[in-house]
Length: 146
Image (cartoon, rainbow, N blue to C red; front, side, top):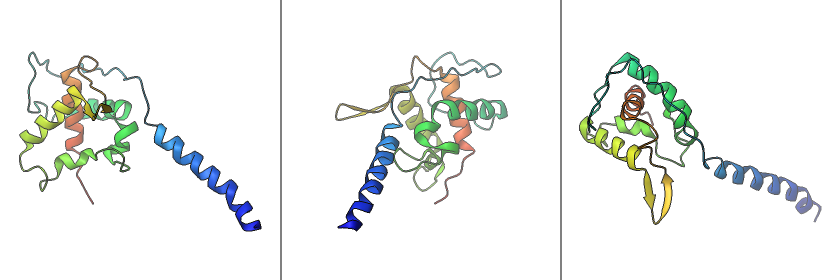
């Protein structure tokens, strides 16, 4: 009986921390991304025009940290709740970079809604295309390792 009384506070505390972590991915205000120094893109493109561009990678790292890391993990290492975006670089999953670029830009622009629930908010109209592709350029530098 005494053992059960000892474990009860620990269980309650554990439940509190688990629930706090589940809700930590709640609504957040997107942060502005300064894309000065990148070529302006007139029309939407489906393949990353900044791949390998050092300025884009720098901007993308900052933009990712401010807007994506809270759900997808610091340095793009997911904790398991949301997709690990480093898998966009996994040649076993994506044999064609253009195909993974197309998936990425579609998901960032339109978000993800499954069964009426928002799993990822849409960023079109909030973040410009240059910022989205800068984030993709940063993700290109993060190899997937199991």
